[in-house]
Image 1 (cartoon, rainbow, N blue to C red):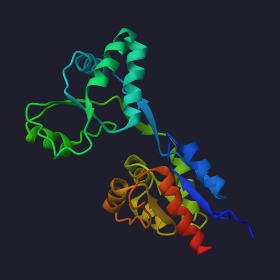
Image 2: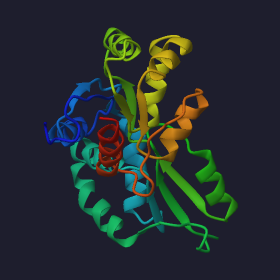
Image 3: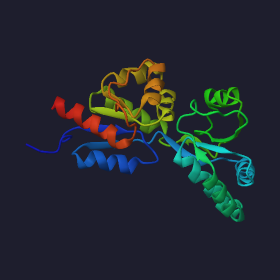
Length: 242
């Protein structure tokens, strides 16, 4: 008997940024991985707002900084290096001065100037409204955008495989992946396909996105919402079914 816990299992991975890292984790455990990156991540089409935000940040316009993704910081630095490399030193020095907020409600934010790097182009009104309601002034930047990665034909092919019972699980790692899937085909088609496979979410935000479409995420890590814990819960669930 094959000792690999995911041997004989087929898992669909709609991840983009870390697709090979995630796929390798699953393949080392014996899984067959169906790679179908749902979204591509592109630089913001107009670098001017990113550069203007970076200049203001470098000049000390923010007391605190909230980074919602590591991808965002990489895109900001990349924009600076391509379009205004002389700004890099000042930007990095300013980055050293600010604190990343882990839990905001415990802090007095009145009068604070807070920079916020957005998740894609999602305006994150709850966060901004909270900060402004707490008396802070907010400076936002959107350094990257999402675009379709897999073409519709590839997504439809994946849906057909799921509906035919050829895919044991699909593991979502971001909300744009969910939305992309539901724009590629009628909602009833997507829902029917997902009903035939084990749906996993990397964390509660992704699980909520699925729930909005009437889909329950049957698997999710309990505490740490990263690829390794997601791999572990897939291993536990699919291994137990073997």
